Amino acid sequence: MSSSLIETPRTFEDMMRIPVLFYKTIGEDIYAHRSTNPLNSLLLKIYLYAGFINFNLLVCGELVFFYKSIQDFETVRLAIAVAPCIGFSLVADFKQITMALYRKTMIQLLDDLEEMHPKTLAAQSLYQMADFERTMKRVIRIFTFLCLAYTTTFSFYPAFKATIKYNFLGYETFDRNFGFLIWFPFDATTKNWVYWITYWDIAHGAYLAGIAFLCADLLLVVVITQLCMHFNYISTCLESHPCNADQDEENVRFLTTMIKHHNKCLMLCEQVNNMYSFSLLLNFLMASMQICFIAFQVTESTVEVILIYCIFLMTSMVQVFLVCYYGDALIAASLRVGDAAYNQNWFQCSKTYCIMLKMLILRSQKPAMIRPPTFPPISLVTYMKVISMSYQFFALLKTTTDRV
Image 1 (cartoon, one colour):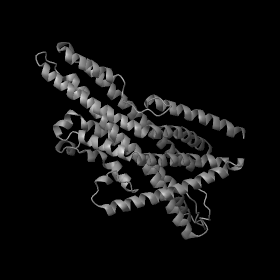
Image 2: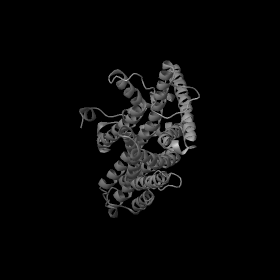
Image 3: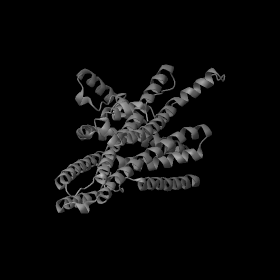
């Protein structure tokens, strides 16, 4: 454990640092409502809107390319190649739209979590916050690396490859290619200055999509980590409470505090569910298609294309696993509250205490969860369902293209 975790308390801002910093690089300021510099907030907002207008124009170009490619059997494989990028872009777009629509809910959720956050070292030790933070940081590092590796590889590999060939391998021309298959209403490769402006424009669009996609999930990871930490604290307190028969008033006061804390956590879980349920439904559906199309590319392409798409495949699979893992952790942590309550020496307590404890146990039987429409609650079972759907799509696509 690092010394900083032992010597100084960790604030809620420390837990939120990575998604907040990454969001700011595309102009999204989660804490804009606290800003004391209105000009800076305005510039960030202009930068965000301009970036998303540019990004959506590029997505339209991908859609046009996809439509043109599926018109001819000779180019249908190009359509399959661009399909995963379109899926990724649409999910990133929808996550950002969801964030904008539920901005007030998100701000209230984060403010409530910050208020509940343990402030002292002693409290953070009781909450086992160091363990939760350590796991959270490992997950964030892995997913951030994969997501940025995917966007960076797709964006800069063509320029890197062309530079090596032109400057070191003696090729007479510099290949002006792009990392993404996009239709433009103009010739983007004839003139050098047009090519490079377009190239950096695409690179920025890819980065913005990657960050919008990444940070929505990082925000979910931070929030669920906090909620699991609170459920774990409630369970630990309930299980370790002595339930002394001669201290009934103190027992009732303790249980009242725990019930209020539990109710607050359940209310926050409902807010998370309202914010994320529909976007995660789209995410899972698109992920199934993405994994299918990426797997097809891996089985049908050259070695260098396979390496690039393997990064994309890993990113898609890890992202779905990440969400499902934390959904599963939330269910398990909330269910443990009822088990911990039952494991008390409640038979020593008064009838009033036992009735209150019974109500707490009954309420904990319905676990906190994220429930996408038409999908089962998000858990590791959901992950297996998504992978199964992906394989079914892949088998159908492979059979169809082989016949063609």
